[in-house]
Image (cartoon, rainbow, N blue to C red; front, side, top):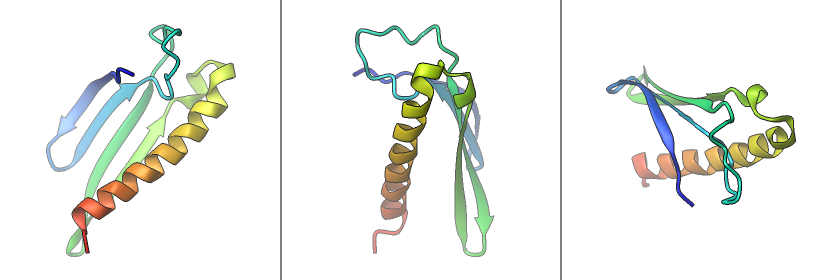
Length: 92
């Protein structure tokens, strides 16, 4: 599948945001008419480290027939991606 996202803001070493169509996995469906969700990544200093906060909003604007499954799939997907990031920054 082709993954498409639009960068909305970038503040190096502090903030990054993008919009996309979550769980847009059916190649027979054109998702471009749907309102995308907003994903925000924020980095904040914390002691000798950094806290990464990831927030995705806008699920309430998805079509009702897709909303619950898109939210459920994204919840699991982001949990997996955050584990990948944790392993990358602390490989011990």
